[in-house]
Image (cartoon, rainbow, N blue to C red):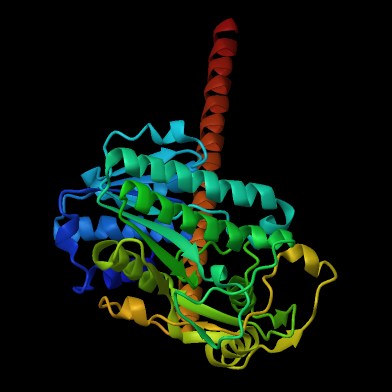
Length: 398
């Protein structure tokens, strides 16, 4: 675990506005635990467990077994994390849990923009089937809390400059890219239905574009925040594929995790909350200029270069609104990191991991060289021994 991620974990657990005692002795299930947000949530809760002595047991559900091993390491020697590899569309896979969760954070979703165009049916079905399976489990287990991670994209296109939780706009249902925001809307409706019919304490977290330390550098994510960060790390000019007029509301990863915990422990059932830093909202063009000039010190430039395959990239339609976070702030939450700091922390984490990878590769080369030298010494000794035996044999024969 790198320095920036450790700092983020402690940024979360230092927040005394979160009523940590409500988690004491409980069991928390996090789906999508091998993704960015789910993984950050598991790491922060594991750190809180160690530092605050909560005796909290964590169940991490995800598809990536290798990343799952890393999450188990985050639990240290306490054994407080159980990892279950599986698909949320398969209810049988969730039956592998050995404990009944008190709190469920449903973070799993397909968030790759290109997949929303190439595989819209899969994106929508994963959202709908996964939400239904988790809600059924919450119903059976009578969970104390359920937070569903929704998205800023549910607001669609609107003429409002700022959107609150009641301001839903227009979505063009004929476009395949609409599978993501519309499936999130459906899942929110399904959550409301289960809450009304079965009295499940469901709460909705509508996240802004969330990024920061822990984001995979080579994950293939085409969203602008990651494209800009990769180009900045490489010292390349930032390429805009559009004019950059769309407004992006952002939130740093540790601020988002604190928001999710606040919603779970302080939020009202059947309510939705925007998780965003209004001060970190900007147009795509403004964000690019900030990275080029403020984060990179003017060493790179911003250029507009629309790709020939722009339709297959899955970019969302232009929006001009910012998310209002007053409702979440009223619960005691406040963001700590602005947009420039978000990028600096992300890039610092990537550089640290790159240095660690280079060190590991150097160490592996050294070990290979040492093994080769040992093998050569051993072969040389064996040849010498054979030669001596042969010489003794020849001497006896004479």
